[in-house]
Amino acid sequence: MINSQTPYHIMKTALILFCCCLIALAQKASAQSAGHDSTAKADTAKPPSRSERMRQMTARRNAMLLPAPSYSGAPAKAARRDARRFSLPKDMVIRLRAGSIPPNSDYFKPTAANAENPDLLTDSGYVQMYRYYAFNAAQHQIINPAGTRLLIGGAAVVFAALTTALIVAFSHVKG
View 1 (cartoon, one colour):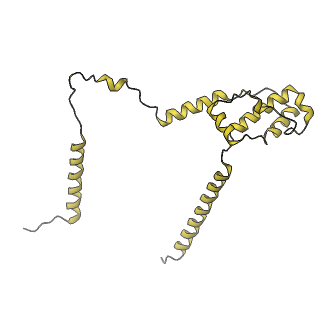
View 2 (tube, one colour; view 1 turned 180 degrees about the vertical axis):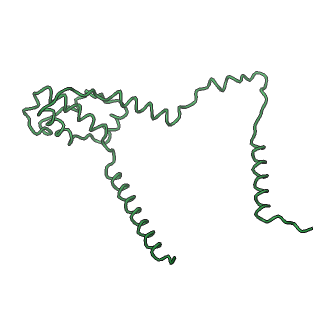
Protein backbone atom coordinates (compact mmCIF):
# COMPACT_ATOMS: atom_id res chain seq x y z
CA MET A 1 0.00 0.00 0.00
CA ILE A 2 1.31 3.47 -0.94
CA ASN A 3 1.48 6.21 1.70
CA SER A 4 -0.85 8.96 0.48
CA GLN A 5 0.19 11.57 3.06
CA THR A 6 2.24 14.50 1.81
CA PRO A 7 5.32 15.76 3.67
CA TYR A 8 3.37 18.92 4.52
CA HIS A 9 0.63 16.89 6.21
CA ILE A 10 3.21 14.87 8.19
CA MET A 11 4.98 18.05 9.35
CA LYS A 12 1.69 19.61 10.38
CA THR A 13 0.71 16.54 12.40
CA ALA A 14 4.13 16.39 14.07
CA LEU A 15 3.94 20.08 14.97
CA ILE A 16 0.48 19.66 16.52
CA LEU A 17 1.67 16.67 18.56
CA PHE A 18 4.77 18.59 19.65
CA CYS A 19 2.67 21.57 20.82
CA CYS A 20 0.29 19.27 22.69
CA CYS A 21 3.26 17.67 24.48
CA LEU A 22 4.59 21.09 25.44
CA ILE A 23 1.21 22.14 26.80
CA ALA A 24 0.91 18.94 28.80
CA LEU A 25 4.40 19.40 30.26
CA ALA A 26 3.73 23.05 31.09
CA GLN A 27 0.67 22.25 33.19
CA LYS A 28 1.50 22.55 36.85
CA ALA A 29 -1.11 21.21 39.22
CA SER A 30 0.70 20.90 42.51
CA ALA A 31 -1.37 19.83 45.49
CA GLN A 32 -1.51 22.04 48.54
CA SER A 33 1.03 20.85 51.07
CA ALA A 34 0.44 20.84 54.80
CA GLY A 35 1.06 24.22 56.36
CA HIS A 36 0.85 25.98 53.02
CA ASP A 37 -1.94 28.50 52.93
CA SER A 38 -3.41 29.15 49.50
CA THR A 39 -4.23 32.74 50.47
CA ALA A 40 -0.56 33.57 51.01
CA LYS A 41 -0.10 34.25 47.31
CA ALA A 42 -3.23 36.40 47.17
CA ASP A 43 -2.06 38.50 50.11
CA THR A 44 1.30 39.38 48.61
CA ALA A 45 1.28 42.77 46.98
CA LYS A 46 1.83 42.67 43.25
CA PRO A 47 3.72 45.54 41.72
CA PRO A 48 1.33 47.81 39.83
CA SER A 49 1.04 47.27 36.11
CA ARG A 50 2.50 49.74 33.64
CA SER A 51 -0.90 51.24 32.89
CA GLU A 52 -1.58 51.68 36.61
CA ARG A 53 1.81 53.39 37.09
CA MET A 54 1.02 55.70 34.15
CA ARG A 55 -2.37 56.58 35.70
CA GLN A 56 -0.67 57.37 39.01
CA MET A 57 1.95 59.57 37.32
CA THR A 58 -0.73 61.40 35.34
CA ALA A 59 -2.80 61.95 38.50
CA ARG A 60 0.24 63.32 40.33
CA ARG A 61 1.10 65.62 37.44
CA ASN A 62 -2.50 66.82 37.12
CA ALA A 63 -2.64 67.48 40.87
CA MET A 64 0.41 69.71 40.48
CA LEU A 65 -1.14 71.84 37.74
CA LEU A 66 -2.15 75.30 38.74
CA PRO A 67 -5.73 76.36 38.24
CA ALA A 68 -5.94 78.89 35.45
CA PRO A 69 -6.28 82.42 36.78
CA SER A 70 -9.32 84.26 35.53
CA TYR A 71 -7.52 87.26 34.10
CA SER A 72 -7.81 88.50 30.56
CA GLY A 73 -6.75 91.45 28.51
CA ALA A 74 -3.35 92.91 27.65
CA PRO A 75 -1.48 91.78 30.82
CA ALA A 76 -2.64 88.18 30.32
CA LYS A 77 -1.55 88.20 26.67
CA ALA A 78 1.79 89.71 27.62
CA ALA A 79 2.28 87.06 30.32
CA ARG A 80 1.54 84.28 27.85
CA ARG A 81 3.93 85.77 25.30
CA ASP A 82 6.70 86.27 27.89
CA ALA A 83 6.29 82.78 29.39
CA ARG A 84 6.80 81.11 25.99
CA ARG A 85 10.52 81.80 26.32
CA PHE A 86 10.63 80.31 29.83
CA SER A 87 12.70 77.17 30.36
CA LEU A 88 14.36 75.39 33.25
CA PRO A 89 17.67 73.52 33.30
CA LYS A 90 17.49 69.76 32.76
CA ASP A 91 18.02 68.84 36.42
CA MET A 92 15.30 71.26 37.52
CA VAL A 93 12.82 69.80 35.00
CA ILE A 94 13.51 66.33 36.38
CA ARG A 95 12.93 67.59 39.94
CA LEU A 96 9.75 69.37 38.82
CA ARG A 97 8.34 66.19 37.25
CA ALA A 98 9.23 64.22 40.37
CA GLY A 99 7.09 66.63 42.36
CA SER A 100 9.80 68.24 44.51
CA ILE A 101 9.25 71.74 43.08
CA PRO A 102 5.85 73.23 43.92
CA PRO A 103 3.94 75.21 41.28
CA ASN A 104 4.05 78.37 43.41
CA SER A 105 7.84 78.29 43.62
CA ASP A 106 9.94 81.38 42.96
CA TYR A 107 11.41 79.63 39.92
CA PHE A 108 8.29 80.65 38.00
CA LYS A 109 8.36 84.33 39.00
CA PRO A 110 8.77 86.84 36.19
CA THR A 111 11.93 88.93 36.23
CA ALA A 112 12.93 92.06 34.37
CA ALA A 113 15.15 89.92 32.12
CA ASN A 114 12.28 87.82 30.77
CA ALA A 115 9.51 90.44 30.75
CA GLU A 116 9.05 92.59 27.66
CA ASN A 117 7.46 95.35 29.71
CA PRO A 118 9.08 95.60 33.19
CA ASP A 119 6.25 97.89 34.34
CA LEU A 120 3.93 94.85 34.34
CA LEU A 121 5.98 93.17 37.10
CA THR A 122 3.95 95.10 39.67
CA ASP A 123 0.63 93.95 38.20
CA SER A 124 -0.62 90.98 40.24
CA GLY A 125 -2.69 89.65 37.33
CA TYR A 126 0.37 89.60 35.07
CA VAL A 127 2.46 87.84 37.74
CA GLN A 128 -0.17 85.15 38.36
CA MET A 129 -0.68 84.54 34.65
CA TYR A 130 3.08 84.42 34.07
CA ARG A 131 3.49 81.85 36.85
CA TYR A 132 0.70 79.76 35.37
CA TYR A 133 2.10 79.78 31.84
CA ALA A 134 5.72 79.35 32.99
CA PHE A 135 4.80 76.33 35.10
CA ASN A 136 2.90 74.74 32.22
CA ALA A 137 5.79 75.48 29.84
CA ALA A 138 8.20 73.79 32.25
CA GLN A 139 5.87 70.79 32.61
CA HIS A 140 5.86 70.29 28.82
CA GLN A 141 9.54 71.12 28.32
CA ILE A 142 11.52 68.50 26.42
CA ILE A 143 14.47 67.36 28.53
CA ASN A 144 16.80 66.56 25.62
CA PRO A 145 15.68 68.66 22.65
CA ALA A 146 18.76 67.92 20.51
CA GLY A 147 18.32 64.16 20.91
CA THR A 148 14.60 64.41 20.20
CA ARG A 149 15.18 66.41 17.04
CA LEU A 150 17.89 63.97 15.95
CA LEU A 151 15.55 61.02 16.50
CA ILE A 152 12.69 62.63 14.59
CA GLY A 153 15.01 63.74 11.77
CA GLY A 154 16.55 60.28 11.52
CA ALA A 155 13.13 58.67 11.35
CA ALA A 156 12.12 61.08 8.57
CA VAL A 157 15.28 60.29 6.57
CA VAL A 158 14.74 56.52 6.94
CA PHE A 159 11.09 56.86 5.90
CA ALA A 160 12.06 58.93 2.85
CA ALA A 161 14.77 56.41 1.87
CA LEU A 162 12.38 53.46 2.20
CA THR A 163 9.70 55.25 0.20
CA THR A 164 12.20 56.06 -2.55
CA ALA A 165 13.50 52.48 -2.60
CA LEU A 166 9.96 51.08 -2.87
CA ILE A 167 9.08 53.48 -5.69
CA VAL A 168 12.22 52.53 -7.60
CA ALA A 169 11.65 48.81 -6.99
CA PHE A 170 8.03 48.90 -8.14
CA SER A 171 8.83 51.02 -11.18
CA HIS A 172 11.24 48.35 -12.46
CA VAL A 173 8.81 45.47 -11.98
CA LYS A 174 7.50 44.28 -15.32
CA GLY A 175 3.90 43.36 -15.09
